[in-house]
Length: 423
Image (tube, rainbow, N blue to C red):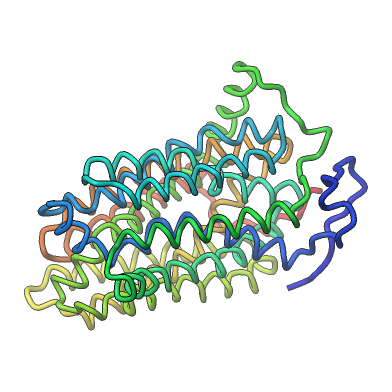
Protein backbone atom coordinates (compact mmCIF):
# COMPACT_ATOMS: atom_id res chain seq x y z
CA UNK A 1 0.00 0.00 0.00
CA UNK A 2 1.36 3.41 -0.87
CA UNK A 3 1.57 5.92 1.94
CA UNK A 4 1.22 9.09 -0.11
CA UNK A 5 -0.40 12.22 1.25
CA UNK A 6 -3.63 13.70 0.01
CA UNK A 7 -2.75 17.12 -1.27
CA UNK A 8 -3.84 18.37 -4.68
CA UNK A 9 -3.77 22.14 -4.37
CA UNK A 10 -7.52 22.51 -3.85
CA UNK A 11 -9.03 24.99 -1.41
CA UNK A 12 -9.84 22.33 1.18
CA UNK A 13 -8.61 23.72 4.48
CA UNK A 14 -8.34 21.43 7.47
CA UNK A 15 -9.95 22.46 10.75
CA UNK A 16 -7.65 24.16 13.24
CA UNK A 17 -7.30 20.93 15.23
CA UNK A 18 -5.64 19.34 12.17
CA UNK A 19 -3.64 22.29 10.87
CA UNK A 20 -0.39 21.44 12.65
CA UNK A 21 -0.59 17.67 12.19
CA UNK A 22 0.96 15.61 9.41
CA UNK A 23 -1.40 15.14 6.43
CA UNK A 24 -3.30 11.87 6.41
CA UNK A 25 -1.73 9.29 4.12
CA UNK A 26 -3.40 6.75 1.86
CA UNK A 27 -2.71 3.88 4.25
CA UNK A 28 -4.24 5.64 7.25
CA UNK A 29 -7.23 6.79 5.20
CA UNK A 30 -7.90 3.23 4.04
CA UNK A 31 -7.77 1.92 7.60
CA UNK A 32 -9.97 4.75 8.84
CA UNK A 33 -12.67 4.29 6.20
CA UNK A 34 -12.59 0.51 6.60
CA UNK A 35 -13.03 0.61 10.36
CA UNK A 36 -15.71 3.28 10.05
CA UNK A 37 -17.73 1.02 7.77
CA UNK A 38 -16.89 -1.88 10.06
CA UNK A 39 -18.88 -0.25 12.86
CA UNK A 40 -21.94 -1.05 10.79
CA UNK A 41 -20.83 -4.64 10.26
CA UNK A 42 -20.06 -5.01 13.96
CA UNK A 43 -23.55 -3.75 14.75
CA UNK A 44 -24.92 -6.59 12.64
CA UNK A 45 -22.65 -9.55 13.30
CA UNK A 46 -21.65 -9.19 16.95
CA UNK A 47 -25.23 -9.82 18.05
CA UNK A 48 -25.60 -13.09 16.09
CA UNK A 49 -24.33 -15.45 18.84
CA UNK A 50 -26.65 -13.72 21.30
CA UNK A 51 -29.88 -14.33 19.37
CA UNK A 52 -30.78 -17.42 21.40
CA UNK A 53 -30.11 -15.70 24.74
CA UNK A 54 -31.86 -12.56 23.57
CA UNK A 55 -34.91 -14.52 22.43
CA UNK A 56 -35.12 -16.41 25.73
CA UNK A 57 -34.67 -13.23 27.77
CA UNK A 58 -37.30 -11.23 25.87
CA UNK A 59 -39.75 -14.07 25.21
CA UNK A 60 -39.30 -14.39 21.44
CA UNK A 61 -40.03 -17.56 19.47
CA UNK A 62 -39.33 -18.86 15.96
CA UNK A 63 -37.65 -16.82 13.25
CA UNK A 64 -38.77 -13.50 14.76
CA UNK A 65 -35.41 -13.16 16.50
CA UNK A 66 -33.95 -12.32 13.08
CA UNK A 67 -35.72 -8.96 13.14
CA UNK A 68 -32.98 -7.64 15.46
CA UNK A 69 -30.65 -7.96 12.46
CA UNK A 70 -33.16 -7.41 9.65
CA UNK A 71 -34.59 -4.18 11.09
CA UNK A 72 -31.10 -2.69 11.38
CA UNK A 73 -30.16 -3.68 7.83
CA UNK A 74 -33.38 -2.39 6.28
CA UNK A 75 -33.31 0.88 8.21
CA UNK A 76 -29.68 1.45 7.25
CA UNK A 77 -30.64 1.03 3.62
CA UNK A 78 -33.42 3.59 3.97
CA UNK A 79 -31.18 5.93 5.94
CA UNK A 80 -28.45 6.04 3.31
CA UNK A 81 -30.75 8.22 1.21
CA UNK A 82 -30.29 11.14 3.63
CA UNK A 83 -26.65 11.96 4.49
CA UNK A 84 -25.10 12.30 1.03
CA UNK A 85 -26.80 15.55 0.00
CA UNK A 86 -26.01 17.16 3.35
CA UNK A 87 -22.41 16.02 2.99
CA UNK A 88 -22.29 17.60 -0.50
CA UNK A 89 -23.32 20.92 1.07
CA UNK A 90 -21.76 21.03 4.55
CA UNK A 91 -18.84 18.64 4.06
CA UNK A 92 -18.10 15.05 5.00
CA UNK A 93 -16.89 15.64 8.57
CA UNK A 94 -20.01 17.24 10.12
CA UNK A 95 -22.32 14.60 8.70
CA UNK A 96 -20.02 11.81 9.89
CA UNK A 97 -20.09 13.21 13.43
CA UNK A 98 -23.91 13.27 13.43
CA UNK A 99 -24.02 9.64 12.25
CA UNK A 100 -21.47 8.51 14.84
CA UNK A 101 -23.31 10.37 17.60
CA UNK A 102 -26.55 8.61 16.66
CA UNK A 103 -24.79 5.23 16.64
CA UNK A 104 -23.51 5.87 20.17
CA UNK A 105 -26.83 7.12 21.60
CA UNK A 106 -28.93 4.30 20.19
CA UNK A 107 -26.38 1.62 21.09
CA UNK A 108 -26.85 2.73 24.69
CA UNK A 109 -30.62 2.65 24.17
CA UNK A 110 -30.46 -0.94 22.87
CA UNK A 111 -28.47 -1.99 25.93
CA UNK A 112 -31.27 -0.64 28.14
CA UNK A 113 -34.23 -2.05 26.15
CA UNK A 114 -36.72 -4.02 28.26
CA UNK A 115 -38.86 -5.58 25.51
CA UNK A 116 -38.28 -7.18 22.13
CA UNK A 117 -40.50 -4.61 20.40
CA UNK A 118 -38.51 -1.75 21.93
CA UNK A 119 -35.22 -3.38 20.94
CA UNK A 120 -36.30 -3.83 17.32
CA UNK A 121 -37.54 -0.22 17.17
CA UNK A 122 -34.28 1.10 18.63
CA UNK A 123 -32.27 -1.01 16.21
CA UNK A 124 -34.26 0.41 13.30
CA UNK A 125 -33.71 4.00 14.45
CA UNK A 126 -30.04 3.24 15.08
CA UNK A 127 -29.58 1.87 11.57
CA UNK A 128 -31.44 4.76 9.93
CA UNK A 129 -29.73 7.60 11.78
CA UNK A 130 -26.23 6.10 11.59
CA UNK A 131 -26.41 5.35 7.86
CA UNK A 132 -23.76 7.99 7.15
CA UNK A 133 -21.03 5.63 8.34
CA UNK A 134 -21.94 3.41 5.37
CA UNK A 135 -22.83 6.03 2.76
CA UNK A 136 -19.94 8.49 3.14
CA UNK A 137 -16.70 6.43 2.95
CA UNK A 138 -17.15 5.73 -0.80
CA UNK A 139 -17.82 9.44 -1.36
CA UNK A 140 -14.69 10.38 0.59
CA UNK A 141 -12.60 8.03 -1.54
CA UNK A 142 -14.28 9.29 -4.73
CA UNK A 143 -13.36 12.84 -3.69
CA UNK A 144 -9.75 11.81 -4.28
CA UNK A 145 -9.54 9.05 -6.88
CA UNK A 146 -11.59 7.42 -9.61
CA UNK A 147 -11.48 4.64 -12.18
CA UNK A 148 -9.88 1.31 -11.39
CA UNK A 149 -7.68 3.01 -8.79
CA UNK A 150 -10.81 3.61 -6.74
CA UNK A 151 -11.69 -0.07 -7.16
CA UNK A 152 -8.24 -0.97 -5.81
CA UNK A 153 -8.65 1.28 -2.77
CA UNK A 154 -12.18 0.07 -2.08
CA UNK A 155 -10.93 -3.52 -2.26
CA UNK A 156 -8.26 -2.75 0.34
CA UNK A 157 -10.91 -1.09 2.49
CA UNK A 158 -13.06 -4.21 2.24
CA UNK A 159 -10.12 -6.40 3.25
CA UNK A 160 -9.91 -4.59 6.57
CA UNK A 161 -13.65 -4.05 6.83
CA UNK A 162 -14.33 -7.78 6.46
CA UNK A 163 -11.99 -8.68 9.29
CA UNK A 164 -14.68 -7.32 11.60
CA UNK A 165 -17.49 -9.66 10.42
CA UNK A 166 -14.94 -12.46 10.66
CA UNK A 167 -14.30 -11.84 14.35
CA UNK A 168 -17.48 -10.01 15.44
CA UNK A 169 -19.45 -13.18 16.35
CA UNK A 170 -16.47 -14.40 18.37
CA UNK A 171 -16.29 -11.04 20.14
CA UNK A 172 -20.01 -11.22 20.84
CA UNK A 173 -19.64 -14.74 22.16
CA UNK A 174 -16.72 -13.68 24.33
CA UNK A 175 -18.68 -10.73 25.74
CA UNK A 176 -21.55 -13.02 26.68
CA UNK A 177 -19.21 -15.49 28.36
CA UNK A 178 -17.37 -12.72 30.20
CA UNK A 179 -20.35 -10.70 31.39
CA UNK A 180 -23.16 -13.25 31.12
CA UNK A 181 -25.50 -10.78 29.42
CA UNK A 182 -26.08 -9.99 25.74
CA UNK A 183 -26.66 -6.31 26.57
CA UNK A 184 -22.94 -5.79 27.05
CA UNK A 185 -22.46 -6.29 23.31
CA UNK A 186 -24.11 -2.90 22.80
CA UNK A 187 -21.76 -1.38 25.37
CA UNK A 188 -18.82 -2.62 23.28
CA UNK A 189 -20.46 -1.05 20.19
CA UNK A 190 -20.69 2.26 22.04
CA UNK A 191 -17.03 2.15 23.06
CA UNK A 192 -15.87 1.37 19.53
CA UNK A 193 -17.87 4.28 18.12
CA UNK A 194 -16.43 6.72 20.68
CA UNK A 195 -12.88 5.71 19.72
CA UNK A 196 -13.73 6.05 16.03
CA UNK A 197 -15.19 9.51 16.56
CA UNK A 198 -12.02 10.72 18.29
CA UNK A 199 -9.79 9.35 15.51
CA UNK A 200 -11.81 11.05 12.77
CA UNK A 201 -11.93 14.33 14.70
CA UNK A 202 -8.15 14.48 15.06
CA UNK A 203 -7.00 13.04 11.74
CA UNK A 204 -9.55 13.32 8.90
CA UNK A 205 -9.48 16.59 6.94
CA UNK A 206 -12.46 17.76 4.95
CA UNK A 207 -12.24 16.05 1.54
CA UNK A 208 -15.06 17.88 -0.24
CA UNK A 209 -13.63 20.32 -2.77
CA UNK A 210 -14.86 23.88 -2.38
CA UNK A 211 -15.93 23.97 -6.02
CA UNK A 212 -18.11 20.88 -5.54
CA UNK A 213 -20.32 22.15 -2.72
CA UNK A 214 -23.98 21.82 -3.62
CA UNK A 215 -26.98 23.81 -2.45
CA UNK A 216 -29.62 22.23 -0.25
CA UNK A 217 -32.52 22.59 -2.64
CA UNK A 218 -34.98 19.81 -3.25
CA UNK A 219 -35.00 19.95 -7.04
CA UNK A 220 -31.20 19.75 -7.57
CA UNK A 221 -30.92 17.06 -4.89
CA UNK A 222 -33.60 14.95 -6.52
CA UNK A 223 -32.04 15.54 -9.94
CA UNK A 224 -28.59 14.49 -8.73
CA UNK A 225 -29.92 11.40 -6.98
CA UNK A 226 -32.09 10.46 -9.93
CA UNK A 227 -29.14 10.68 -12.31
CA UNK A 228 -27.11 8.42 -9.99
CA UNK A 229 -29.69 5.63 -10.16
CA UNK A 230 -31.03 6.00 -13.69
CA UNK A 231 -27.91 6.31 -15.84
CA UNK A 232 -27.88 3.17 -17.95
CA UNK A 233 -24.14 2.54 -17.67
CA UNK A 234 -24.35 2.33 -13.86
CA UNK A 235 -27.88 1.26 -12.85
CA UNK A 236 -27.25 -2.40 -13.67
CA UNK A 237 -24.29 -2.47 -11.30
CA UNK A 238 -26.26 -0.84 -8.49
CA UNK A 239 -29.19 -3.25 -8.86
CA UNK A 240 -26.82 -6.17 -9.32
CA UNK A 241 -25.05 -5.29 -6.06
CA UNK A 242 -28.42 -5.16 -4.30
CA UNK A 243 -29.28 -8.65 -5.52
CA UNK A 244 -26.03 -10.46 -4.79
CA UNK A 245 -25.67 -8.81 -1.40
CA UNK A 246 -29.32 -9.53 -0.68
CA UNK A 247 -28.31 -13.18 -0.89
CA UNK A 248 -25.41 -12.48 1.48
CA UNK A 249 -27.75 -10.72 3.93
CA UNK A 250 -30.06 -13.73 3.71
CA UNK A 251 -27.14 -15.90 4.82
CA UNK A 252 -26.31 -13.52 7.67
CA UNK A 253 -29.92 -13.46 8.87
CA UNK A 254 -30.28 -17.23 8.94
CA UNK A 255 -26.66 -18.24 9.59
CA UNK A 256 -27.00 -18.86 13.32
CA UNK A 257 -30.00 -21.14 12.85
CA UNK A 258 -28.66 -22.81 9.72
CA UNK A 259 -25.13 -23.52 10.93
CA UNK A 260 -25.77 -23.77 14.65
CA UNK A 261 -29.03 -25.71 14.58
CA UNK A 262 -29.66 -27.39 11.20
CA UNK A 263 -26.06 -28.57 10.81
CA UNK A 264 -25.52 -28.98 14.55
CA UNK A 265 -22.37 -26.84 14.72
CA UNK A 266 -23.42 -25.20 17.99
CA UNK A 267 -20.47 -23.42 19.62
CA UNK A 268 -18.46 -23.71 16.41
CA UNK A 269 -20.73 -21.17 14.70
CA UNK A 270 -18.49 -18.12 15.36
CA UNK A 271 -15.47 -19.95 13.92
CA UNK A 272 -17.33 -21.10 10.80
CA UNK A 273 -18.78 -17.65 10.25
CA UNK A 274 -15.28 -16.20 10.65
CA UNK A 275 -13.89 -18.58 8.01
CA UNK A 276 -16.53 -17.48 5.49
CA UNK A 277 -15.96 -13.78 6.18
CA UNK A 278 -12.19 -14.26 6.03
CA UNK A 279 -12.57 -15.75 2.56
CA UNK A 280 -14.17 -12.48 1.43
CA UNK A 281 -11.31 -10.53 2.97
CA UNK A 282 -8.70 -12.61 1.14
CA UNK A 283 -10.49 -12.23 -2.20
CA UNK A 284 -10.78 -8.46 -1.74
CA UNK A 285 -7.04 -8.31 -1.12
CA UNK A 286 -6.50 -10.39 -4.26
CA UNK A 287 -8.79 -8.06 -6.18
CA UNK A 288 -6.75 -5.05 -5.06
CA UNK A 289 -3.66 -6.67 -6.57
CA UNK A 290 -5.14 -7.35 -10.01
CA UNK A 291 -7.93 -4.85 -10.65
CA UNK A 292 -5.79 -2.02 -12.03
CA UNK A 293 -4.12 -4.45 -14.40
CA UNK A 294 -7.20 -6.26 -15.72
CA UNK A 295 -9.93 -3.72 -14.96
CA UNK A 296 -12.95 -3.79 -12.66
CA UNK A 297 -15.26 -4.96 -15.43
CA UNK A 298 -13.21 -7.95 -16.52
CA UNK A 299 -12.60 -9.14 -12.97
CA UNK A 300 -16.17 -8.72 -11.72
CA UNK A 301 -17.79 -10.21 -14.81
CA UNK A 302 -15.63 -13.32 -14.62
CA UNK A 303 -16.37 -13.66 -10.90
CA UNK A 304 -20.11 -13.39 -11.54
CA UNK A 305 -20.07 -16.32 -13.97
CA UNK A 306 -18.19 -18.47 -11.46
CA UNK A 307 -20.61 -17.36 -8.72
CA UNK A 308 -23.53 -18.65 -10.79
CA UNK A 309 -21.81 -22.03 -11.22
CA UNK A 310 -21.07 -22.36 -7.50
CA UNK A 311 -24.62 -21.31 -6.59
CA UNK A 312 -25.97 -24.02 -8.89
CA UNK A 313 -23.78 -26.56 -7.08
CA UNK A 314 -25.06 -25.24 -3.74
CA UNK A 315 -28.66 -25.76 -4.84
CA UNK A 316 -27.91 -29.30 -6.00
CA UNK A 317 -26.31 -30.28 -2.68
CA UNK A 318 -29.02 -28.50 -0.67
CA UNK A 319 -31.64 -30.55 -2.50
CA UNK A 320 -30.07 -33.81 -1.30
CA UNK A 321 -31.56 -35.35 1.85
CA UNK A 322 -28.16 -35.84 3.48
CA UNK A 323 -26.43 -32.49 2.93
CA UNK A 324 -23.79 -31.93 5.58
CA UNK A 325 -21.83 -29.06 7.03
CA UNK A 326 -18.80 -30.30 5.05
CA UNK A 327 -20.46 -29.58 1.71
CA UNK A 328 -22.32 -26.43 2.75
CA UNK A 329 -19.41 -24.48 4.25
CA UNK A 330 -16.86 -24.87 1.38
CA UNK A 331 -19.43 -23.82 -1.21
CA UNK A 332 -20.71 -20.91 0.89
CA UNK A 333 -17.14 -19.79 1.53
CA UNK A 334 -16.42 -20.02 -2.21
CA UNK A 335 -19.32 -17.76 -3.10
CA UNK A 336 -18.44 -15.31 -0.35
CA UNK A 337 -14.93 -15.25 -1.82
CA UNK A 338 -16.36 -14.44 -5.24
CA UNK A 339 -18.30 -11.55 -3.74
CA UNK A 340 -14.90 -10.03 -2.97
CA UNK A 341 -14.28 -9.74 -6.71
CA UNK A 342 -17.77 -8.33 -7.31
CA UNK A 343 -18.71 -5.87 -4.56
CA UNK A 344 -15.94 -3.25 -4.64
CA UNK A 345 -15.71 -3.38 -8.43
CA UNK A 346 -19.45 -2.96 -8.97
CA UNK A 347 -19.47 -0.06 -6.50
CA UNK A 348 -16.60 1.80 -8.15
CA UNK A 349 -18.07 1.32 -11.64
CA UNK A 350 -21.42 2.67 -10.44
CA UNK A 351 -19.87 5.76 -8.79
CA UNK A 352 -17.35 6.55 -11.55
CA UNK A 353 -19.41 9.14 -13.52
CA UNK A 354 -20.39 11.18 -10.44
CA UNK A 355 -17.18 12.87 -9.28
CA UNK A 356 -18.82 16.23 -8.52
CA UNK A 357 -21.90 14.87 -6.71
CA UNK A 358 -20.24 11.91 -5.01
CA UNK A 359 -22.15 12.37 -1.75
CA UNK A 360 -25.62 12.41 -3.31
CA UNK A 361 -24.68 9.63 -5.73
CA UNK A 362 -23.27 7.45 -2.94
CA UNK A 363 -26.42 8.02 -0.88
CA UNK A 364 -28.81 7.26 -3.71
CA UNK A 365 -26.95 4.17 -4.84
CA UNK A 366 -26.42 3.06 -1.24
CA UNK A 367 -30.13 3.49 -0.55
CA UNK A 368 -31.11 1.36 -3.52
CA UNK A 369 -28.43 -1.21 -2.78
CA UNK A 370 -28.92 -1.48 0.98
CA UNK A 371 -32.72 -1.19 1.20
CA UNK A 372 -33.33 -3.65 -1.62
CA UNK A 373 -30.61 -6.00 -0.41
CA UNK A 374 -31.79 -5.85 3.20
CA UNK A 375 -35.43 -6.44 2.28
CA UNK A 376 -34.44 -9.36 0.08
CA UNK A 377 -32.14 -10.70 2.77
CA UNK A 378 -34.93 -10.51 5.35
CA UNK A 379 -37.25 -12.47 3.06
CA UNK A 380 -34.59 -15.09 2.40
CA UNK A 381 -33.82 -15.40 6.10
CA UNK A 382 -37.48 -15.65 7.07
CA UNK A 383 -37.96 -18.37 4.45
CA UNK A 384 -35.56 -20.59 6.41
CA UNK A 385 -37.18 -24.01 6.72
CA UNK A 386 -34.51 -25.98 8.56
CA UNK A 387 -32.47 -26.61 5.38
CA UNK A 388 -30.12 -24.66 3.11
CA UNK A 389 -32.49 -24.91 0.12
CA UNK A 390 -34.11 -21.44 0.35
CA UNK A 391 -30.71 -19.77 0.65
CA UNK A 392 -29.15 -21.77 -2.20
CA UNK A 393 -32.08 -21.08 -4.51
CA UNK A 394 -31.96 -17.37 -3.67
CA UNK A 395 -28.22 -17.17 -4.39
CA UNK A 396 -28.66 -18.75 -7.82
CA UNK A 397 -31.68 -16.67 -8.84
CA UNK A 398 -30.16 -13.36 -7.68
CA UNK A 399 -26.88 -14.09 -9.47
CA UNK A 400 -28.63 -14.84 -12.77
CA UNK A 401 -30.71 -11.67 -12.47
CA UNK A 402 -27.55 -9.72 -11.68
CA UNK A 403 -26.00 -10.95 -14.92
CA UNK A 404 -29.06 -9.67 -16.76
CA UNK A 405 -28.75 -6.23 -15.18
CA UNK A 406 -25.04 -6.02 -16.00
CA UNK A 407 -25.74 -6.98 -19.61
CA UNK A 408 -28.28 -4.14 -19.73
CA UNK A 409 -25.77 -1.57 -18.46
CA UNK A 410 -23.07 -2.82 -20.81
CA UNK A 411 -25.42 -3.05 -23.81
CA UNK A 412 -24.72 -6.75 -24.10
CA UNK A 413 -20.91 -6.48 -24.16
CA UNK A 414 -19.01 -7.86 -21.17
CA UNK A 415 -15.32 -7.82 -20.10
CA UNK A 416 -14.62 -4.18 -20.98
CA UNK A 417 -11.13 -2.62 -20.69
CA UNK A 418 -9.65 -0.98 -17.56
CA UNK A 419 -10.82 2.55 -16.67
CA UNK A 420 -8.23 5.18 -15.77
CA UNK A 421 -8.55 7.73 -12.98
CA UNK A 422 -10.14 10.88 -14.39
CA UNK A 423 -8.87 13.25 -11.68
